[in-house]
Length: 125
Ligand code: 5GP
Image 1 (cartoon, rainbow, N blue to C red):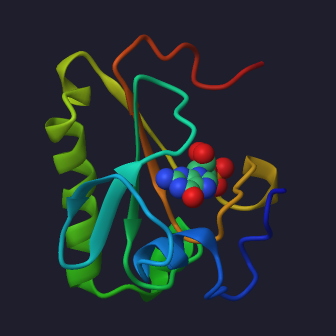
Image 2 (cartoon, protein in one colour; image 1 turned 180 degrees about the vertical axis):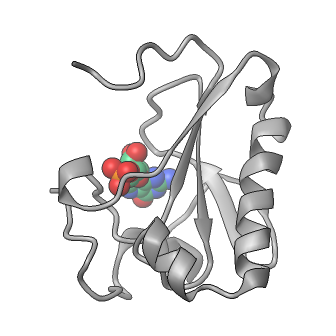
C-alpha cells in the first residue's frame, strides 16, 4: 500500500531492517553512506535499489536534511551501480517514487536503477 511520504521516518520499515542486517539482501555495492542491492521482485533484467544508510523517507527529505558527504556518496553510488551492472552500456532509467500518488511502498528513500532491456515509455498514459 502506498505510503504518505510526509510522515516521520519509521525505524521498522523493510529497508531499515535490511540496513540493520535483520533481513538478507543481495548487495551490489556498499559505501560509507549508501547501500545498493537487487530488488526482490525485479521489473527489468537489471533492477537495483540504491538507498542511503541514514533515516530519510524521500528524495526531498534527504535533500533537505542529509549532510553534503551523504549526498555526494549517494549520487556517486547510483552512478557506480549503473556502471558496475552494465546498465550504462545501452541506457538505463532512474526512478524514485515519493508518497501516495507515486505508489511508494517502502518509506525509506530508494532510487531504482533499471536496465538491461528496452524500458518502454516513461509513464503509462
Ligand atoms: P517503491 O514502490 O517503494 O518505489 O519500491 C519498493 C521496491 O522494494 C519494490 O520494487 C519491491 O519489489 C522492493 N522490495 C520490497 N521488499 C523488499 C525486500 O525485502 N528486499 C528487496 N531486495 N526488495 C524489496
